[in-house]
Image 1 (tube, rainbow, N blue to C red):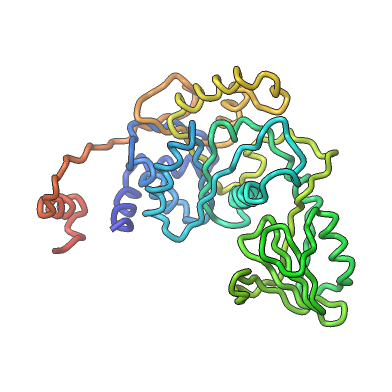
Image 2 (tube, rainbow, N blue to C red):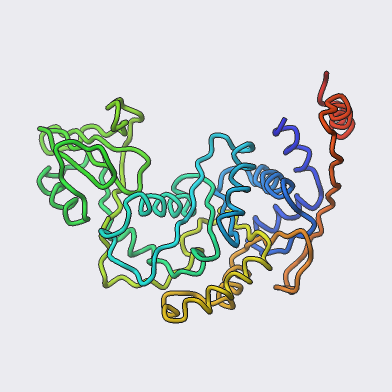
Length: 339
């Protein structure tokens, strides 16, 4: 059903125009969309774009995230979803933060950067916070590939330097262990632990595995292990868009609500102003980086951007009358549905 629906919506002129704007990274304003029509619209635009890039949805609060997550889970049952969690201010060293929170943030940034396709949710609070520069994140990362030569003790020392804990057995994020010619590690930026095998000093094999069952999941040729500790010399002055790949679609849901929340946060966090972008800076970032601002009604923000009013017709309540529902669907889909 969802494929038929998305295919039909993808044929709508305004959807095709929005996809063209996205290809050119031209920010635009979309009005007339509300409720379930929003995720369907963006699923159709994503289809027109080839379904290759990640999608990021910026919302005023987590309440809107729950709604989007439910709708998008129906359209993308196999696509991973992750919220970019905000951090507590003032910032504290990573080893005092929750590993789960760090892993969630790492996954969200991985999706944004295109290392893996996924859906990212970003609240106004998280959007406002200045991020570690991508160079600071990747510069300290440990990168290994099958066929390379590394002494096991050097890799262990490097993992300790990155903040990883040496244990007897890996069963949680941020741990590693050594057993003969085998090293197990659970990178903070991975959804599974990784087992590396040596032959003499050469990395002979690498695969992900489930920490509970110990079963292998996937053969790997390389791995990047992100640090748990960040060098304090690296600066936090990057915005979200510095992590976004060229094909990452960024959507601002109900910009009036998002910008109102930013105003509120500006007032509440004056003592941490140096660690935050202000509302005007964020509006300029969104306009410059091809964001799509979607809302049910028009608004006064970024009126210089091209605007599309999406023709959406409200659906009548069927009150469990499935025959009438099927009849309407058949008419709308041109007979593609059959009894």
